[in-house]
Length: 183
Image (cartoon, rainbow, N blue to C red; front, top):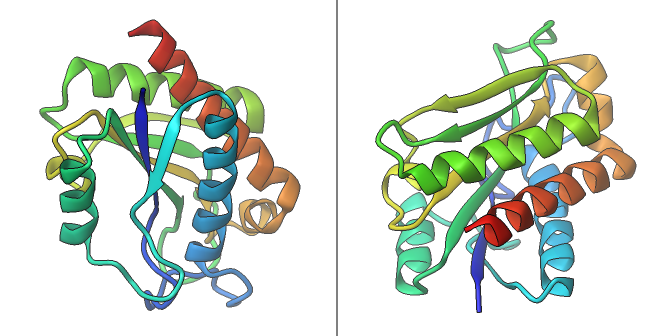
């Protein structure tokens, strides 16, 4: 049975991870979407585990070590982006993989990115490479998705919307399922 690790990026107390007006903490978006993705994947027969906690900020090393111990098939970290300290025009969705990522990570990232763009109709910032710990230190295909910018007023409003959270969750789950059934 396939095991997917879902990671609501950051934690409930991570400082600075919020909209400029303070109305949305990034973790609130990330956790809501992670739970929804988990529900969708579980209904499709996928086993889902989470690396985050609602009561504390789980260190990155603990998140990746846990995923590696569980021998997961894939690791998906869910985020909302930000740029600068105030409101600005940066917008769109992007998905990250490690610079030396496996082909399987690249295929997973592409499937999720395409699904997010199709479902959410936001600008496509593409699949990018970065040396994020959750991508570098996991032993399985791993991606990090940025579902919009908290520092953009339009996208901040979307990120707070249950409808948009559901769109993102369905798209991420769909992308994961396309990857899984294509392996």
